[in-house]
Image (cartoon, rainbow, N blue to C red; front, side, top):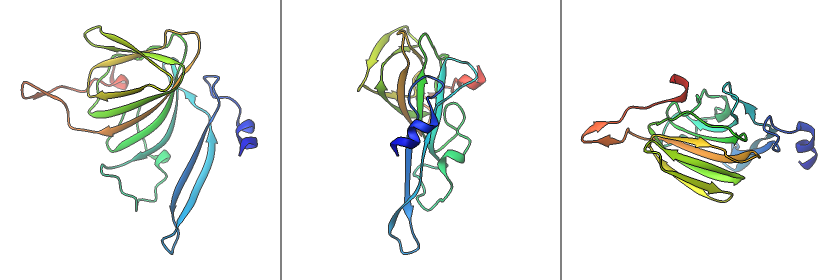
Length: 176
């Protein structure tokens, strides 16, 4: 598989492409490898990051009998129900818009570092190996370094956070 990685070339971010291996079941119910591919991340329209959708589910809990390739669903820039795992390469100097989604998000920094800013102005730097648990809060991502930062994001649909009994509205980048 190493040769296949070399043949794909670098992602738009300059980082290596991502290997994806998908399992499933055969007619006898035994575990099998359904697919394997190597794909680069691709620049999003804002030009500050490159994304690669790895998988999505239409529902939570997920349906392991659904044979749809999870990469083929429209997952939007954030989450359109169900769950999503994607690789995000934040480019040097890149910054997302402030946003909030009805989801719980797990971000695992695979390479580099990223700054997380909350709507009150508080900031934290998360470095390689760090994990972020984002619980429906209004936030933005910023890469203040001179090299790309690669993050694996897992987003799972959740009800809106309720403040004083009222759900806080989503603020989605694609609606900004």
